[in-house]
Amino acid sequence: MRGGAWIGICLMALMGYAQAQTGSAPVAEGAGLSSGETRELIDAVKATAKATRENVDYARSVPDILFQILTKLDKIEGKLDKVENAINRERGRRTNAR
View 1 (cartoon, helix red, strand yellow):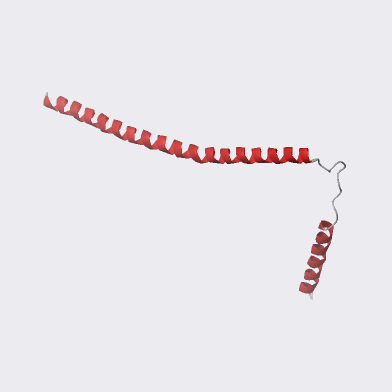
View 2 (cartoon, helix red, strand yellow):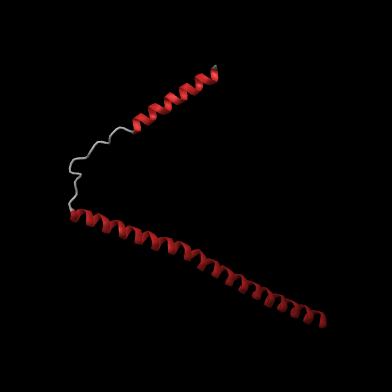
């Protein structure tokens, strides 16, 4: 019995919410746009879409470039470690030879 009551309350709440959504939206005064204004809005939307695409392309390419730079720096660091180890070995040999 309790379950049926809860289901009924939930259904009534959802129906009230659905009825609130179906009400007509108030119309703003001067909502009628001329064809020139409509074209301007469409051009603005196109420009925004183009800028968004460029931004996404930039956001995709920057991490790739950074990854390539970090990879090269790691390779350089590895080579410097090898050179440093070779220098230390030579110093050790010279010290042992004396």
